[in-house]
Amino acid sequence: MCYPWDVMPGRPSTKPTPAFGSRLAALRQERGWTQANLAERLGVTVKMVTYYEREAANPTANTLAKIAAAFGIEPSTLMEASQVRRAAKPGPPSQLEQRISALRELPRERQKIVLQVLDTFLRDAQKAS
Image (cartoon, rainbow, N blue to C red):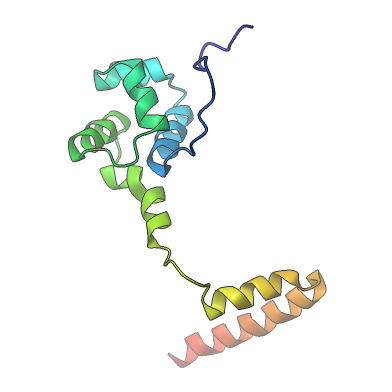
């Protein structure tokens, strides 16, 4: 079997990819870089880039700074997806989330009516503030 040049051969991981790794891989692919290109820019091995993309959940501050510099972005950009996931509270869904779930179950026409009422309410509330 022949693998594409940019895919690591071997058994696929059974663990989900950490948010940091997913974000790093997405940024790399957006730039059209291979793992080898990124490794060269960072001064590390391809195996290290693979580790960052597939397993590293909490990279060090130095690693973040080095990767961010290679992409020309702020280090916080690399962690945004991770921070969003951590921001969610554990426990039962809020009343708003429960209502949104119920709204999703309604037929499309009823959803439109509810959204029109909600839009009107929000517009009036913003005018009153």
